[in-house]
Image (cartoon, rainbow, N blue to C red; front, side, top):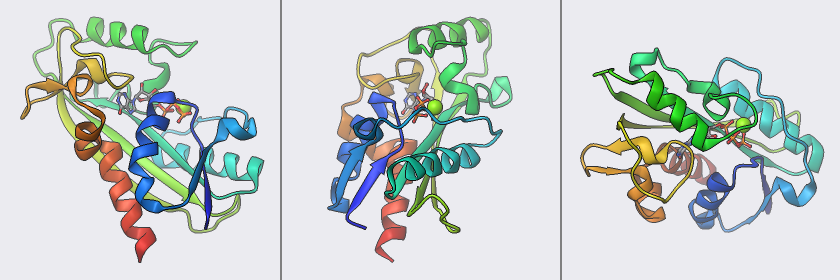
Length: 194
Ligand SMILES: O=P(O)(O)OP(=O)(O)OP(=O)(O)OC[C@H]1O[C@@H](n2cnc3c(O)ncnc32)[C@H](O)[C@@H]1O
Ligand SMILES: [Mg+2]
């Protein structure tokens, strides 16, 4: 494998992957470079959606593809928004409206525990019978008001309790060192070295 396509249209994720995948030492291209259409993500689990996105991209490009399906799982909401995190407040996708809806939904709620989940799927080709899968989780709490301007998505509401900082108050290196995505990539790189 000397080239890999990132099967994501999320600018925030792509930025994080650029650093996280540097140790791979291979050419990593965004799927926008190939005009890949947006994949369907209809499944109830992160892993199924990640595989669907990776296969869609590999089919369109003829190259190995890596997809990330991720989301925020809030304990008091039974794991919601979960796989629906990107469109929690409906179409079109909007981080600002998602955060607003989360704050409103959790108003008066004392259990603020939540975690981010990331599932990565790497397929060598569209019909790969053995996708490489790697997962990561990041535990935190949902604040009552946003803090910080880094990152993307729900980062301004996601408090990392041991630091007393939100994910949006962390530099990219600091976030990558702790995040669900950082942990999943570390495991993926481990699998690839075997
Ligand atoms: O499917 P792609 O094209 O990769 O981009 P997406 O944004 O639609 O990605 P997902 O379907 O995996 O939805 C994940 C959503 O979960 C949230 N999310 C995931 N990782 C996050 C992170 O590190 N920080 C903040 N929010 C995150 C954010 O709202 C994302 O839009
Ligand atoms: Mg998506």
